[in-house]
Structure formats: structure tokens, C-alpha cells
Image 1 (cartoon, helix red, strand yellow):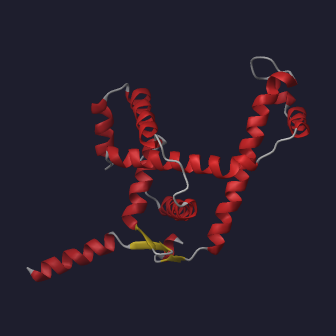
Image 2 (cartoon, rainbow, N blue to C red):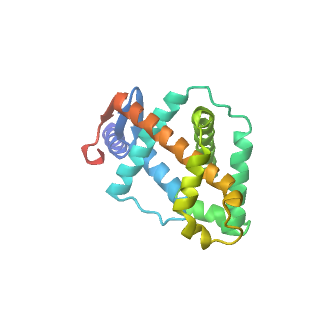
Image 3 (tube, rainbow, N blue to C red):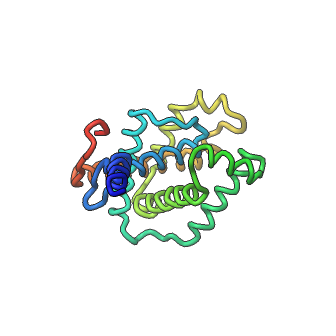
Length: 207
């Protein structure tokens, strides 16, 4: 009996081995598999788990740990749970015709729980709110930059419905340029945290 228990424990630890350690936080193989299944469900992708996908998922989980450590408790998380539930309800309505039976069947097929999807949606909303609160306030888009963007994309605008005048499109262009600037600042911030972080890969094939 003891041998059987030891054998099961050994097999279980092999299956759920530690893939990487970020600081003092371990990321396990099961974390990779679960996150991959959740993202594939949300993106309407077929369930698969190739080595390149696992490496990509591990990188995303490492970044999540770096973001979580970097944001601390400064992010306003009010109404995050309600917003995540609304997103989930809209997904059920749009993709499954509002049928809980259909969505639950698909979740079972992928080995997922509704709570895991809600947790992922909440995390995505927290990150978006952190990025907006941390980086958007320092962004300044000038009128000259908006005009330059308009001049460079006039042919593209001409193929779109509605007015193509500078005055009509300037607000949308400003939003686009602000979003690009925010993304750039966030990417630079995250890259800096990667360089400074203590990241130890435990599975060489996932590095």
C-alpha cells in the first residue's frame, strides 16, 4: 500500500512539476495548462497544448507575476467583479445563445470551471485599469501629431463610411495615438521589470 501511495505521489509531482519561479512565486505545469485552456476558450480557439503554446503561456504567466508585483495594491478594483460577470454573461449570450447548458457542456469538454473564466476576466480588467491609471495621465498628444497621422492615413480613411474631414476624425485619431503611447510606455515598463526580475526556469524545454 505504501509503495502504491509513493508511486502515485511521484507520478503526481511529475505531472504538476514546477515550470518556473518568479521571485518567490512558483508557476506550475498545471497553471500553464489551465491558463492555456481558459485563453483558448475565451478566444474561441480549439483546445490544444503544443510546446510552443506552453512556452508562450508560461511567458504570459511570468509577465502576470511581474505586473502583479509591480502594481501592488494601488489599483482601484471597485466593481471589477460586477464588470467581469457582465462580460461573461455577454459571452454566454453572444456565443451560446444565452444557454447555460451549452456553455457548461463546452466548459466540461475543455476541463474548465466558470469560476476560472471569471477569475481570468477579473484579472484582465484589473490590468487594463492599472495601465490606464498608471500611464495614461502622462500622455500628451499634440495637434501636429494628429494632423500628421491624418495625412498619412487619408487613403485608409477614405474607404471608411462617414465623414472623412480632419475635424470629424481628429477625436478618434487622438484616442488612437494616446492608446499607442500608453501601450508603448507599459511595454517599456514591463520590459524593465523583466530585466530586473529573478526568473528561474525549472523546465529547460519551456525556456
